Length: 245
Image (spheres, rainbow, N blue to C red):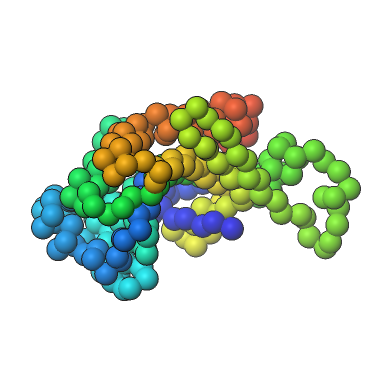
């Protein structure tokens, strides 16, 4: 069950949708030990004026650099992920699309294999302790005897796979919790999407061009994700999600 926290949120009634965007790039020869604040700044991947948000993690299997503006970069063998909270930002203000493109430009010989644009949306249910669970088990799934088994209400998640013209899109829907500053929590739904692009079967130059185009088109993926979540899943649930909105 996913958990997140936002110190800027004060009361349950103020909680609104929390969104995050991640851009993950896979390649044969990504080395986590190369990821550091110095490397990112010396290569021009991130601006020199960016300051660390917390102590970096550096290791052979995982390295992470987090900046004060909310951008986090995580490197693992064969994969590097750029993450950023959307919050109140206009999508055009997000940093990671440009940072991911800079990374590809600076390390053009990394033998790239794939690209994933992964938006997340955390939808609170402040008025109902079981609202998120009931949404999955009673709205998305048909009620039946399978729900009435065991000594506690059944928990469920949903994994969906869509074939789009440009790529394959997967969407998972699960229960989550939003952790409040006073240590209380609010039930929520986590929508996690993945737009997966396979680029590894082309020539090196074609791979780079396709990879950059996929990164540059990130806003279309985010827009499609938001439309699917808000219009095709939650359009009939707005009053229960945000009473009085």
